[in-house]
Image (cartoon, rainbow, N blue to C red):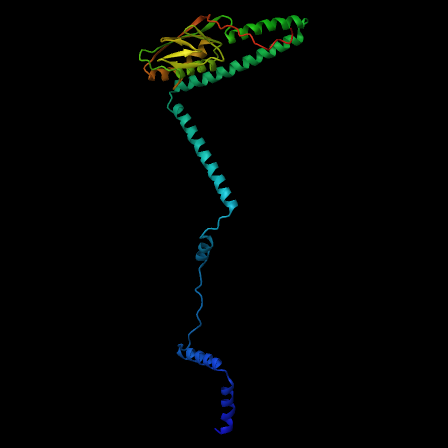
Length: 285
């Protein structure tokens, strides 16, 4: 090769900056060191399952999703509590005898019938008022009858009729006020119209409390045996006390003795003084 051929090359090299020459030399050395036929490095390919897992974890929770999760948790907890309470209430019936179940159904039917009778009675009174030739006289008669009924409920007048007498013996002193209150409520639910306990008339506002190992009714201390005189339909009152897990079984678990007697004539003669209102007056006066 002639000197003229080498001159341009040498001249070009002389004109290149030193930094460029160094970079070119490094690239040439790297290519020489690399194995022949080696492919450029590529990122590993992920499978579909791996991409799905990478997208789901770590989770990205927004505020709206958090609120929905809390609401769903509260709903699920409420449903669980409701199912548990229903299971507890049904467990007593599952263990009851067939005779007891029949008695409970009969009691429910009797309550339904009493409500129907009351409805029919009110409709009859309405019809009598509408069809009577002397509506004023008919209204007066119904008012007098209603006054007697309200007097019985308020305890201001004596009453008599069929019913039961329940006597609770408590030699161990285990009977408490709440047990007697349960008995009163059960009797009311069974249709009791007048109740008297050891000479104290029971009305809508009656309260019971424990007092020195005894029980007080409206502030009047009563001692065992506790004697209930109840006016109502005996066929409804007695079964209501003897239902499984009812009043009688609860008292017997406390080592108390309970006797229930039906009678065609029960006299409830304990009275409560009629309270005169301080400010209210009848608008007809």
